[in-house]
Every structure is written in C-alpha cells, then in structure tokens.
Length: 458
Image 1 (cartoon, one colour):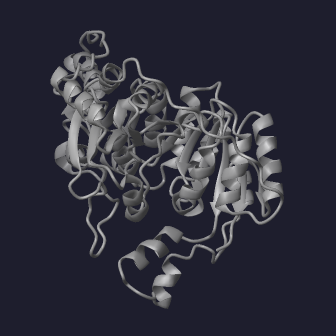
Image 2: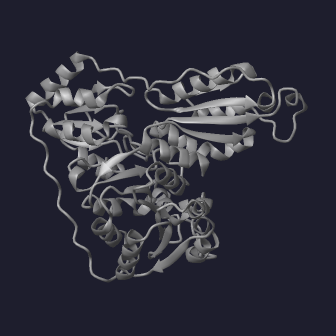
Image 3: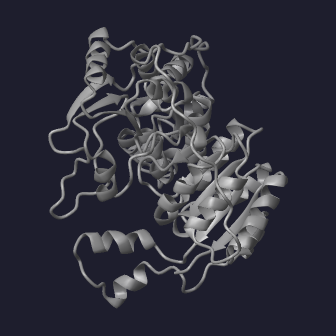
C-alpha cells in the first residue's frame, strides 16, 4: 500500500513521494507497485533500512541482498557508505528521482547510521529542466502534417497533459494516447484523443490507415501480450515512426511549436443516464459519466470491465485518469490513497476489480483511518474474467475443472460490504442500475470513504 500510495501521490503532484521500508523483505512486499511506479515514470524517493553494518555477517533472518531487490524497479540505487554522508546521499536520491523522466530512486541506510554522528544537510535540490527537442524533428513533423499522408500523433509521458492535448489537437492530426501513461486528462474535453485499446484487434482497427506516427515522449505501440499468429506491434505494417520528443525531453514545448496558429478540437457529447435495469459495465460507465464531479480523479483497476466503463467516462466531466501502468495488479486502491493525499480537495474514485482488490485490500483500512474522500466501486463478478479471455486467445480451447476452479473466486463468496465494515468503512451493495446510481449520488454528496459493491453477472 505504501509503494502504491507513493506512486499515486507522485503522479498527481509531479513531486517526489517518499517511502520508508524495512530491510529486504519489506522492500520485496512493495516491488509489485514499484514496478507500476517505474512504468508510470513517477518520482519516488525510496528509503530502505538495512541491518547494522556489524550485524550483516551473521546472516540474521531478515538479511537479504537489498540492492538486488531494488534494481529491477529503481532507476538509481545506492547504499550509504557513512553516516556523515547521509545528507548528501539523500539530496542525490531526491535529485535522481526527478530525472527527467521521473523514476524510483532507492537509498539503503544501515541501522547503525541512525545512532552514529551525522554530517551536514545535503544541498537543496532544484527541479531539473527538460531538454528541448531538436528543431529538425519539429520541422520534419511539420512537413508530414503539411503533406497530410495519414499522420497520427501518439502522446506519452509528460506530454499527456492538458497543454499537450490542446497543442496536439491544433495540429489537425489524429491524436492517440499511450494506454499506460501514468496520468491522463479524460472526459468530454479530451474525448478526441482516445487511448490505444488493450486488445490488438481494436487497436489495429483504431490505427488503420496511418502511414506516419509522430511519437511524443512515447514508444511505438505494442500489444500487452504476444498471441499466436499475430504481430506484437499495433501500427499498420509499413507505418513509419518519427520521434518528435524522447522521454525526458519537453514534449509539450515541441507540440506547441508544431501547432502554432491552428484551430482547437471540439468537445465531445455528454452522457444520458440509463434507466433502472441490469447492472453492467456499460450502464456503470454511463451512470458515472453523468454523476462524476468535474475535477475528479479516477484510479482505474477495472481490468475486464474497463473498456466499457471508460467508453462511458469519455462523456463525463473533465477528470484525471490513473491507470495500471505496468500490469501489476493490486495498484488501484493504494494509488487512490496517494492521489487523495496529494489532492485533498478533489473527489477520488477507485474503480476496482474484485480479484485485484484482494491484493491490497488493507488500503481500505488506510482510507478509513485517514478519512480520505474516496468512493470505491468494486466490480464484483467473482471471477478473474480477464484470464478467461486471455486463455481463449492463446487457442487453448476449453479449460479443465481444475483450471476453472483456479480463476473462480466465488466459492466462498467475498462479502465486500461486511469486509469494508470490518475495516472501518461504510459500504452498500448494488444489484441494479437504479440502486447503483442512488449510491453514487450519495457518495458524491458526502465526504469520506464509501464502498459500493457492484454485483455483476458472473
């Protein structure tokens, strides 16, 4: 929860969040959400305690290779070499976390340094400036736009922001967002720029006809998994890639130079609320589109329900979307915690698959303890439905009873209302669209955490 909360805080603030973890096993517990933070390019200062230097040789139970644990998720790793150098090492750690782009920076500190004589404070860290892309790249992109030969622009990283989107819209090109950008403005004002779909078939359909793709702090789009008989790349064969801005460069400035003097895009349509009836991802998306407050933050870990709900949210008021960036589940609830701490005046919705929520459900206790303004929606289909889909896509055919049991989480059924109550959170269950809308209205009007179990068909 700590690692995911740091990620959510950093994504919303754009400033380093700090974590304090206990030796190698404590860091190991955080690796899953640090993986997502690394993919999100979130600036995180990760302080990890180590055994006292004289104790390491005894291989006590918590002894581990902490640096080895930290390297796969960190862009910078150091073990402090002296208590007198802690101040300088901490400043270097903060500086490293800022990049650009942002990254997890891990500083490992032996326990005996806390009771030894320290040195001075480190130097104040200034935010490093992003490099401006080469003018030749801007000129090349401008030439492509003048020709009008099936040109698309893919935004990622720091370019996925309101300024970047406005500038991209003014180019007149088709605009797409990297699906796994750490933070994305969504809703009616930004519906003109779709996120590249999860599955390769709809992604290929969306990108069909492109001859040139301009990359702005983004890599060429690829599918989440490799599938039999399918390409891993999503752009049409023969589509040429052109880098306007690399990660760490100022993609927004490059877009603004490219877009000077052009007309902006139009806002998308609003949503109509569905009548009472069955509760489905589609009806949930439409209800949220009508009721989501302007300026809300959405932590999205809906997994198999996500495409349908996000289609509805494209018609909502302007909001920020925080997706799962590295595919490591268990992120949604902790990221919502961090976002709420970073932006206490904004309503944070955690839209959470039931299976994913079980990886970090202690975050519900944190929400209650801190009184965070977070409505949580649990998409309760009592199944790892995404695994149904992915197994079929491999051509595996019908699955056997043991495999079927492994992806069924309905026996015993998880009672989310009672579980949330035991962790200090108010909760209720919705089985119809009308009841769900009623509960969302109540959650929007009130302050504090509230859990809604959305009972979906299995």
